[in-house]
Image (cartoon, rainbow, N blue to C red; front, side):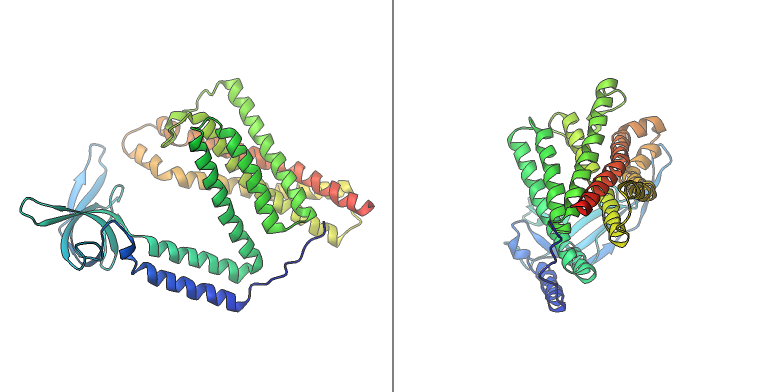
Amino acid sequence: MSKVQPRYQVSWFTILFVIVIGGLLCFATQHNAALYKAPVGQIIKVTNEKRIKQVDNFHNHDYSQKQILKVRVLNGQYRNKTLNVQNTFSASNAMDQAYRKNQQIFFAVQKKSDHKLQATITDLKRDTSIVFLSLLAISLLLLTMKISGFMALLSVLLNGVLFFLAIKLDVLLQGTNVLEIFGVLAFGFAGLTLFLVLGKTKQMVVTFGATILGTLGSVLVTLIVLNLTHDQGLHFETMEYVTQSPKPVFIAETILGSLGAVMDESTDIISSLFAVHRETPDLTRRQLFLSGREIGKSIMGPLINVLFLIFMADTFAMMVLYLRNGDSWGYAFTMNMSLGMVQSLVSGIGIVLAIPAASWFASSLLKRGDRS
C-alpha cells in the first residue's frame, strides 16, 4: 500500500470562490428574517438607564442595568412595525446580556388588554456570526494546508454526521446499548479520519492500530479500577442533562475523549518514525522503537498538559461561582471537577500506552517492509 498522491490540488481560484460564496452567505443571513417562523427584529436604538449596585450575602458585588431597545420587526404579521422592548442585564452576564444597536434578535409578541403590543426577547440571532466563523476556518484550512486542509475539513463533517446518527440510534434504543454504539463509533471516527488525512498507506494502518490499542487499554484500565473501587468518590448524578443511566454515558464520553488524545500522539510518533526511516533506512528495529519512545516522551508532557488546561477552562467558571457563593473547595471540586479529572487521567493513561504501541507497530512494519 504505497502512498497515493492526491490527484487534485486546491487552486487559488477555488479558495477565492469559497471566500466569495462565504461573503454572499454572510450577507444573506443578514437579510433572511423571512425564513424564520419566530419574530425577528433589528435594534435601531438603545437607551441605557442608570446602573443599580447589588451586593449578596457573600459580599459579591454586581450591578444591574435596564435597557430600552427600539426594535424594527423584520418578518411576520408585524413586519416594519417599531416596538419598544425592555432588557435588564448585569455586569456578570451569568443569565443575561447587553444588546447593541444593529444587532438582530428573536422575540415573542403578546397583545395586552389595551391592544398594545408587548415584546420579550428570547435570544440573539447568531447565524451571521456562525457563517463568518465557519468561513474563516475553512479559508484558513485551504490557504495553509490546501488539499490536506480540505480532507481534514471533510473528516470533521463526516464525523459530525456519524456522531449525529449515533445519538439518534441511542435515543431510538432508549440508551440500552450506549457503550456498544459509541464503541463502534470510536472505531469509525479513527478509521475515517486517518483514511481521509493519511490516505491508503502503511502509515494509516499503523496509526489506526496504535490508536485503537491505546484507547482500548486506557478504557480497560478505567473499567477495572471502577469495578474494584465500586465507583467510590464519583458522582455521576452531577452530569448535566442526563436522561438515562449516567455511568454508561460517562464511559462513552471517556472513550471518545481518550480516542482524540491517543490519535494525536500516535500520528505524531508514527509520522516522525516514517520520516526517520526514510532518512536513515539502516536503523534496526530496536533503534526505531527507541526513537519512537523518545519522541513520545517529548510530546507526552505537553499533550497531557493541554488536555488538563482544556478541562480546567471548561470547569473554571462554575468553580468560581461555587466558591464565590461560600461552598468549600472539596464540595466545589466534587460537584464540578471530579468526573472531568477522571476523564483527563484516563486520556493520560491512553497517551502513555500509545507510546510503546505506536513505536512497536511502526518499527515492526518498517523493518518487515525492508526485508520484503
